[in-house]
Length: 209
Image (cartoon, rainbow, N blue to C red; front, side):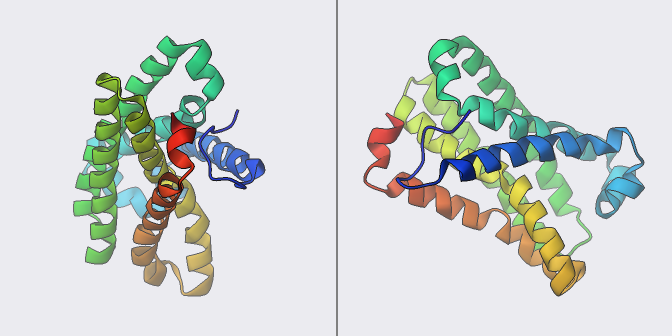
């Protein structure tokens, strides 16, 4: 299963690695179901204790959106089972709606400082905006625009992957407290820039049609 929208020369193994990472991280995100949050998500413990509804909405639904990405970008599924693609798209959008709203609240109440709060909060806002725009174009049967905005949405959903790449690097170099506020921006801004680069290349219009 591979994405059918990628820049010329973009290695297929890289795309496969991204999808595999997305699914593994999505599954791993449910570790709070088998172990105490204090053990498996210590940085999120204050959210679980003080605002459990928002916490569990976010950690429960965001992984669903992440796990659906490889399926929704499957060209074979879109062609052979368009109804399944549409229904899974609704599930993807619904998961992001609730995970994004709860993400804004969690960002507002984070204990990691204003820089981290701004990065996470803006991520949630732009995540909601790009996904909502993608769904709006799909409802209007503007397929080219829908796919373009889905690429942007996917780039932000994949912040869950890049976040987990940067966290151990930051912790091993300058420490968690010093690196986390920057990572809250680094996890998604370069992703979105890469998505724009993909979309603005001359061959992209033909590729998403």
